[in-house]
Structures are given as C-alpha cells and as structure tokens.
Length: 144
Image (cartoon, rainbow, N blue to C red; front, side, top):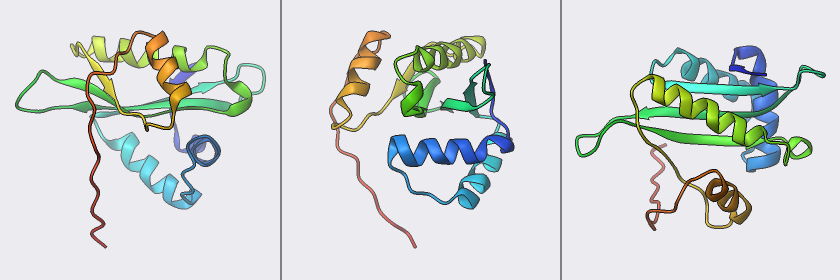
C-alpha cells in the first residue's frame, strides 16, 4: 500500500536513509525535518507499506519546483527502498504514484539528480522512462 507519510513513519524513514542512502542523520532531527515537510504545501512524501508486516519499506519525496525560466515540475528529492524489499517493484510503484500526483496538479515533468556512483539507480531510472539530460557539478557551502 502507498500512502502519505506520517510522523509515526519517522524511525523507518531514518533507517532507510541510513542503510540505503548512507545518510547518518539522527532520528530526532529526521522527525523535525519530517514535520516541516508534512506541513509544507509544496512537498509530497509517500511511503510504501508492506501489507503483511505493516512495515514501511520505501519512500519517495518530491517538491513542486517553480522557476521563472520553465514550467513547474516535480523535483524528486529522495527515493529509497529497504535492501530486503528491492527488486519487487516498490520503487516503480512509488515513482508512478508521485508522477500521478504531479499530473493531478497540472505538472507535466519530473526531474531528479542521482550521484555518479549510483549506477544501479541510473539503470532503474532509465528502465522507468527517465533520460539523463544534463551533466553538472554540485556546489555546497556550509553556513554554520
């Protein structure tokens, strides 16, 4: 089953982030971020829940991306599926649901970024119809 995330999903999301995306962000801070995401009108976070175990096995997080130089689009900020639940179509189902949400809002495109080293993810995105359209570098500046 796919549904909108709730605060109760926080420990599962944090565990997936840590184990599958290598983001070691504490659960209390994850909860604070999740509260903000769930209250933001331009963010959409869906979870996949196993019907038999009631466990969250994956999630997708998208944001409505607005700019002055192209039509609104959805920007996928995260897609992750627990290791033992991969290769079962969960990622595809999550992406299909988020694409349907985008369409329902009148959005006609979805974009995402994926690290160069995530070649398996790249094959997955290509398999579900995404194409690599741009090579770029990401710059970062810590403010505190």
